[in-house]
Figure 1 (cartoon, rainbow, N blue to C red):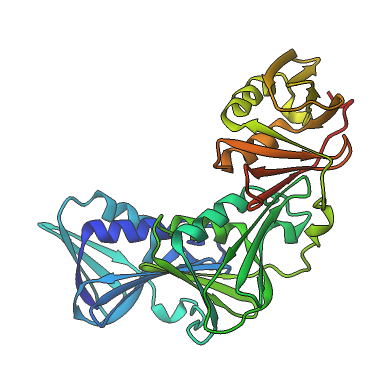
Figure 2 (figure 1 turned 90 degrees about the vertical axis):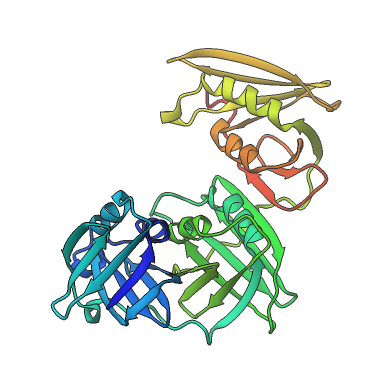
Length: 371
């Protein structure tokens, strides 16, 4: 194998792959990146056996071939090079020579025969969605995914495809829920449910651009792949039955109040300083005539009270929420005002962007006495 490639492009591609490399794996080859040179392209592949990523770019291929190199060490070397182009060649003993101007390095690799093959995907069912839209729905649902392994199926984003050509994305940890819907383009009617692990979601988000260029999603029985620009990410799906989240979404709320998003963010940041993160203490929301009062009281810190004007003119209503969970939702909302729908202190709050019902956020209340 021998090829010449832009140092900047190689640095960029390797940087996209490092989080997937199985650095702590008991299988040594998983700490390596597979490098292939063929058909005028260089193809880089990394996997930890759950998530795999393949990136490709044009290069001047002088001799086709493949090898694997230690990912972190190779990445650190290429990152430090100051030349425009680098020449890389590998001999039959898996020793790779890296030539950068007057500098020469030799790095020991391992045979590509030991590297796990990524599954073929191009015969799979598929749909397309713009990269910007896919990135948006994944960002706005993945923050609510559970970080605890005791509810395994909640550690991923749930994707449901319906025959009408729509895709519903859901993330929840049991205390908050984010749900959004997007139409997708497919040559066939697709149905099915998939749970995509959070690590794969994070890698997919990093590889998506904020433009209207399409991302193509390939669906296999136990895997899903997303191709965008010059990369493909393939991941195993989580096994298990995702809960019926629609059961916790109120069909109707008794009151809906509009809240200025930025002002509420500021006040929640202030009042959250008077809660105890270790005990998940709550902030009390008190709705009175034309006013919302937020209060928090903890023995360790003290007490705080802030107020903001709201368009509420009913009977006094009190409900408690985890301020950090509420702040997370507000950060991923986009409109100037959000709508908060409530029933009583014991049922979940429904949060949407003003004049929209998509995306939809659900926040479970806390006990009012929990200070």
